[in-house]
Image (cartoon, rainbow, N blue to C red):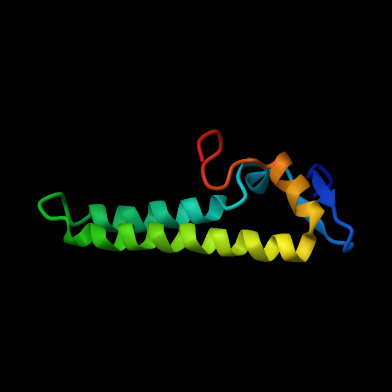
Length: 96
């Protein structure tokens, strides 16, 4: 674990700025959504109905990430803004 980079917060905790969480703040949400989409794709492409799950799940994850961002801002204060500067992407590195 010595190779990992992190931001030391004023609270005494650390926020990872390398590895998966250095690429995007909610990269695990992206993986969850891709897994959900793949389940929908097993049903084929004849109907949109199976894809309602992936659409709903995307909305849920975006909303959750916005709430998480607010809670982290309250918890870490200006350290959270610095973390967002160091890890600018929310879901997909280089895109979102």
